[in-house]
Amino acid sequence: MMKRTLALAGSLFILLTLSLLAVPVAGQQSRAAWSQPQLLGPGWWNSLTMDREGRLHVAWYGKIESDEDLGSPDVMSYAAREPDGTWTEHNDVIYTGNGGYTVRNALAVTSNGMLHAVYRAGAVHLFASAPARAASDASLWDKPVSINDSGYYVDMIADRHDVLHVVYSGGIGVLSRGGQIVHAELSPCALCNDMYYRRSTDGGLTWSTALPIGFEADSGSDRIEIFEGNSGRLYISWDEGHDWYQGSGTAKDVRIVYSDDGGLSWSDPIILDGGGYVDRRPIQIAAAELLDGSLMAVWRYSTDLDRSIYYQMSTDSGITWTKPQAIPGLIARSINDTPLDDYKLLVDRLGTVSLFAAGQINASRQMNASIYQIRYRDGIWSAPQRIFYSREQRPEWPKAVLGPQNDIHLVFFTRAIREDAINVADAVRDLQVYYAYYPGNLPAQITAFNPTSTPPPTPTLVQIFEPTQTPFRLQSPMEETITPATSDTYAAQVLLSGMVAAGLLCAGVLVISRYVRRR
Image (cartoon, rainbow, N blue to C red; front, top):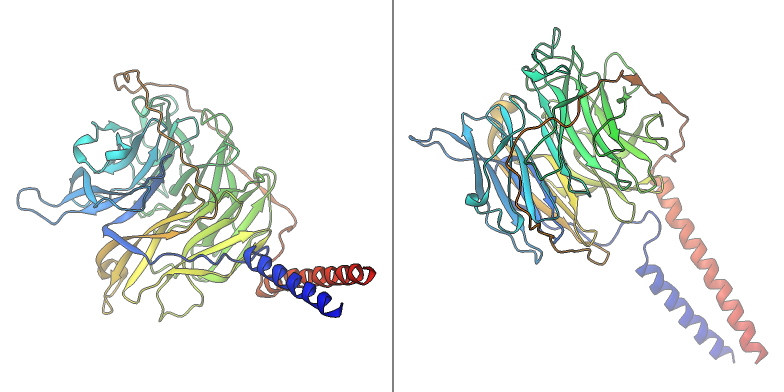
């Protein structure tokens, strides 16, 4: 009888141990690992999107070697990762002009199987499209449509209804509220860029009138991002104050606006000032809507006086926010490394938030910044997971998108640095775009394209709505409700889960033992 009881207890212990190994504890990292970063090609300022067939599209600012006849051409380079994991060879699909004008770019895909690109050509922004299944063929890209007459930053998405949304930073000569061409900026930020928004309901053939979103007469708008939350709400986030491209203005704050009607109207700007300090201001914002509808904002200060990376939370659409808290385990790279980096927040289908950032685990100047992923779930930040590090290259501009299996696709670029360089501008020797992959953990969600049979209308620029301005307001903070993430609290959660499992095991053994004795 005793032997039978011990055997049953031993079997129960083995089964319970195997189940605990198979199911991750809350807050515990997955056993999956990032792939070795793969070189896509020479270039920088990368963007990416995923189509409904599971095809990844990547674009970046490429550069063709100088030619006696062509001069120094600027191009948008492109490559695609097919659903089976194979890559098309990267190709320069769009020639944007000569002279070294940065080809900022963004991609989006609509359900009819068309890939759309908005990109900077010279000093203007243009829009063009190509079939998503064959976008590497430069001859299939259609004639571009003009978005504006001057600008630098640009971003674009296609929402769940196939409406295209473009945001960009535009300079002088933009449309004012009355439809007149005016100079938007005055001293102390003369010629600075402001942020504007346009939408298209017909695949980019016609566009709404430019709507000023970040529009102040004494500051510029930098690092613009537009995204759609799980709720269907649209968000735009950006840095307000300093305009890097014009070299004017000073950092003021970071901002978010949202739209509940597909971009027809927008909220007042939600302003995060980082505590209102005189000697430091927040920059480099990334924002995300969590699955429960709450908001997260991540940013850093514009100075090395404080190199922590901070986050804030809001549960009431940005009316109130938690006080800024430093994300544990990682610090921002030195602001002297590059003033042009960016962060990315990505929320997966299970609700886990991933922050992708170039940073350091300590302030040593002997070590270059690395690309890290840090996960956030149930109020806890995981330990940073390093994806890329190199002694010869400095990575920046991480951008990520979810795949059909809840997998993650990450793209970033690197600058090669000379050890004897006087400054970063002189130190850039070459630029490379890299890709890394993180396996998924859910069944694939893949659907077919839905091509339209009706002929598209003739491209024209039409006015859909008149822009309106709303006063800016500062949001008040609320009391901290997020549990601080430390190694102690993380370990305590894992330990507590183990204690609960042990208690269940003991209870099961006692029940089985009593049952056997009765028989």
